[in-house]
Amino acid sequence: MGRDIDTKLALTALNMALADRKEMGISNLIHHSDQGVQYASWEYVDRLKENGINISMSRKGNPYDNAFAESFIKTLKYEEVYLWEYETYDEAHKNIKKFLEVVYNKKRIHSSIGYVTPEEFEKLEEVLNERVS
Image (cartoon, rainbow, N blue to C red; front, side):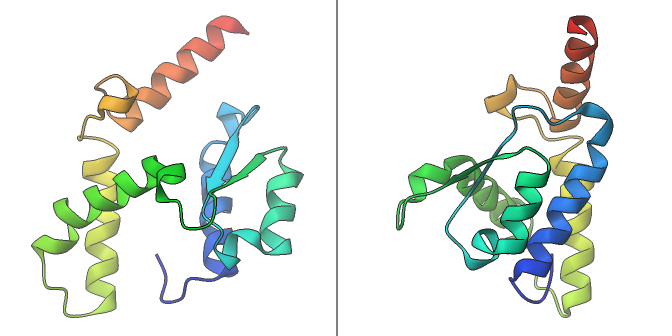
């Protein structure tokens, strides 16, 4: 989360995701985004390519191409943002971060990944990858 939607913010998020999942491996990964300037910047695209990540962008004006992300934003708004009247940016940042790290990733089950939490799903993926290796 940042005050500006720019390449620096997107790169920071990408680098965090890569670092957090480094031990899991990222082969055959597809990065899907809209056509925002932050995702189309040379620096961002180069970072994806450096890591062998396949790039996929939505067609202009077609939110259905990015349905999972749109669904996530709806959940974030209805289950966190709309419930509070944040007085400061720092308060919003703290609450949204807590929602994502504690509720969304560790407690909230997701139908699209077999009715488990994202954390449980990633652990299952690790176990399956170890068995295949």
